[in-house]
Every structure is written in C-alpha cells, then in structure tokens.
Image (cartoon, rainbow, N blue to C red):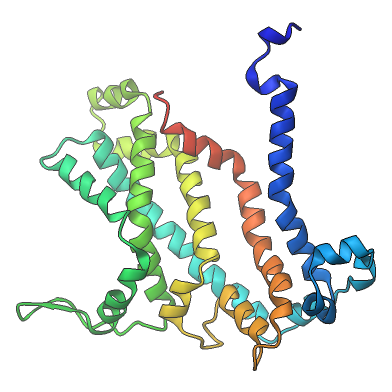
Length: 299
C-alpha cells in the first residue's frame, strides 16, 4: 500500500507515538503493583525503581501485604456495604434521569430550555461545598419562613443518606448525558409512534428506553465506578462505624494503623479495592464507549 494513501492512524510513526504514550502511562501502574508485593522493610527503605536497578526486586516480593488486608476483620462486610451503597446509588439517579431526559428531548413544555439550563448549571456545583448543608438537611430538615418544607429526617449514618447524596450529585450529569443520547435517536421513529396514538409513557418504555440502553449503560458504568471508589461522601454520611464502613474507608483505616505505621499496605489495599471496578469497566466497556459517543452523532 502507498504510504501516502494510508490513514494517519495506520502510519508507523503514529503507532510508535501511541505505543510510547501507552508505555509511559503504564510505568506508574507497574510500579504501583510491584510495590503492593514488596515487603515492609523494602517499601520503607527505598523506591521500587531502585530495587529493579539493583536487581533485588525478586527477593523483596511477598504475599504478606495481601494476607494482612484479605484476612482483616470485617473486610467482607465492607465489600457488602460498598455494594449496598453503590447499586442503589446507581439505579436511582438513572431511573429519575431517564424520565427527565425523555421529557427534555421529546416533550415541548413552557420553560424547558430554562429548566435544562438549570440542570446543566447544577453540574458545576462543587461537591465539597454541599456536604455540610446536606448533613444539616438530612438531620434537621428544612424550614422556610416557619413552614417545614422537609421534615426532620435524622438519617445521617445510614445508607439512605448516602443514596440521597449520590443521587443528587449524579442526577445532573445523568440527565445531560441521557438527554443528548435520546436526541440522537431517529426522530421519525418517535413521531411515528405519536401518529399511531402512542402515549408518551408507551413511547418511553417501548421505544426510547430500549434504544437508549447503550447510553444508560455508559452512565451506569461511570456512576458505579465513581460511587464505589468514593471515600469522601461515604465518610461524611456514614462515619467510621465498622458496621457501616465501605471498602475504601476500611482499607484506609487498615493502612493507617494505630500510629500511622502501616502505610506500606496502601498499595495492596488499593489493588484489592480496584478489582471490582476493573471487572465492571471491562465488562461494560463496549457499552461505555458506544454510549459516550452516541450523543455526539445524530442517528
């Protein structure tokens, strides 16, 4: 094949550049995994690249770090707590956002553009700035001019509080992504259903929802990874009660130790906590990529 007729991504120079970038990105992760297998004294004495250059890396490898993490007390409960937090925190915002996205995409109503602008604006609200108001709201409710708008819930320290928090933080992005994805669906299909007398509810469940599976899977993957790996929100709303502790909080507690002396376990603890997100991501990778690019191209 003539080199001039090759596409840019088929050229040898492009491949070399891409391989170089990939290897550069992989180096920290290789060191991260190697450190998770090194013994305590080696980790505290010198860096992993020094071990490789000196040829002592094989003598330092051990499973002791993983043994201490895996056989830690209540670790299995922390995994269960993470799923108990993550699954509802993924399903609830997707369910609400799917209905909202359909309304923004296919229903004409007064103030639709302003409402959607408000949804997009909510994406820029810093999560950290909202935590204290949310804590007070979930404990004492909300009163405006002496009128109780939200009753006193007192749900801090429960999974429900975390579900509400992640739903609130995830809804704007979910609505934005799903609305853009639904806008890329063939308009003629929706119009045909309307001409045949189908209600919006029927059109949503029979057409829009099945055709938007890729977009829903894309956000579900994103939201699952975000919530499962979350440390801040879980700590704020659940605290450090061992019965409610999620895996990220539990690993952090184990690796700190009583006097901060167990930090060498951080890498092995992080590798263990990464197993579930990696399985989820690679299982749904095809839907994730298709869903992200689906809203960028009109169907």
